[in-house]
Amino acid sequence: MQKVSQLYEGKAKKVWVTEDPELLIVDYKDDATAGNGAKKGTIHDKGIINNRVTNHLMKLLEKEGVPTHLVEEISDRETIVKKVTIVPLEVIVRNIAAGSLAKRLGLEEGTPLHKTVLEYCYKDDALGDPMVNEYHIMAMEWCTKEELDLIAKYALKVNEVLSAYLKDLNIELIDFKLEFGKLSDGTIVLADEISPDTCRFWDSVTKEKLDKDRFRRDMGGEEDAYKEVMKRLLGE
Ligand code: ADP
Ligand code: UDP
Image (cartoon, rainbow, N blue to C red):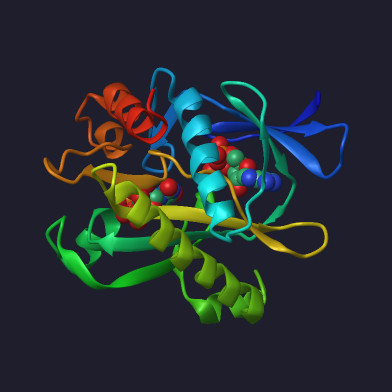
């Protein structure tokens, strides 16, 4: 499978058209941004780690009945995926209060939530990805009610599967962001990535942060943290 032309260059990945109109190649970069592009930098080998971690987790999810865009990993940084029309929502799942939720509700980071929280943000960088609810989503016709119900069901299933899997690796899944898309036949699948860029991972024992918060908050040690996640997941 060959790259034909670049379709899109985002903050963390390039997306390429292939000879097959139904397939794309995603190419993971080391570039890191935070605060909607306000802070820019690189994390050495992040692209390699995020490509491998995403594919590892998506394979696991496929086995557990969550359909994904994954087709085949073709190099360290590149994966063939099914082309989808992205539903313009960031679907956020939270188990423990952190980040913007902790701020919004005045909670100390690390406060357990009595029930899993599902949030939707409208995926629009210029607007700063504002939070929306089901009514906004229906009113804007970003997807149908049936599609949103399926997206919510898949998001909660992803949380169940990944929380249990990561627990055995001494990683607490605090929260994460998912994106879903529609195949040409209308099927909803999980798309984009699942990585330390898009999840909060805390060491279960030390509560050390093993994710992009190290970069966002100028804590340092982001390269080692990403490597540690890959080591625990893939054994290398
Ligand atoms: P951003 O657009 O936020 O800067 P990235 O750098 O990760 O993010 O760019 C990847 C882009 O590709 C995102 O806009 C994402 O929604 C989109 N995308 C992810 N998976 C697919 C797919 N299977 N088909 C089409 N687009 C996809
Ligand atoms: N997240 C993401 N992309 C975004 C916004 C959030 O991947 O554009 C992830 C983030 O890594 C975290 C979760 O979604 O795991 C919840 O993020 P939050 O709303 O707390 O935002 P933040 O504190 O990162 O601004």
